[in-house]
Length: 222
Image (cartoon, rainbow, N blue to C red; front, side, top):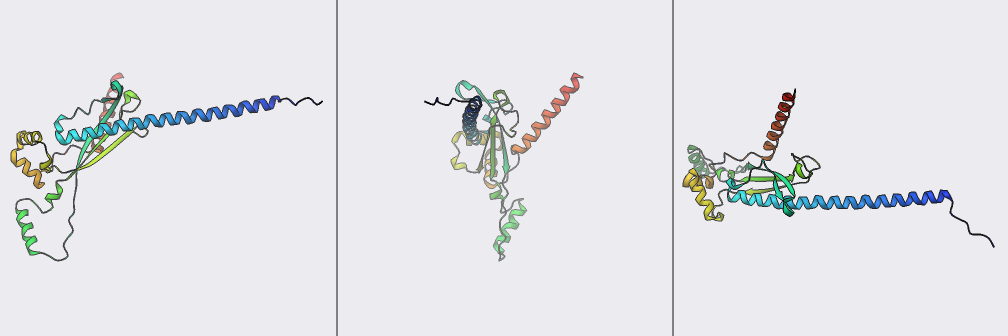
């Protein structure tokens, strides 16, 4: 009878190496899936925070929390999210009629004498954008850099949509100093100034302030 051939040392080494590669591939796949799940969970949290900030801003801009401090969110507030909200005016260009209309020209001249134009009723529209990202205290960053989980929501906003305002908002708008004239200015698009700086403007300002603060602290250490 012939004896059975045993496994050589080289075959054992190759089997162990193959098993190690397979185990490493499984571990990497599990880690990737776990990391993707965590990032998706952060994005869901950020989308919820961004939506709440938009609703709060439309109801009462003065009620927003300070954007200098992170927002606690999650189970027992274990995560910290930073945010910024900006507002931009929407520019609407009306097409030039092919056939001149004397009545339209007369109306435009009357509005021009009052410092207005036909396009004012369109220029009152605004785009409000809010960006939320994972803060540096819980694995994110002080700025929404690449690689930091983040979400941006934008919404077209008509400040003259008074019928959909709640009574408290209308009362605050009247009592804020503008009175009924301020409400009418919003309806006609005459007041489109004083917008909250856009997200890009706020990000640029924050980075400049951070760089200035870092330079100052470095100089004081010397």
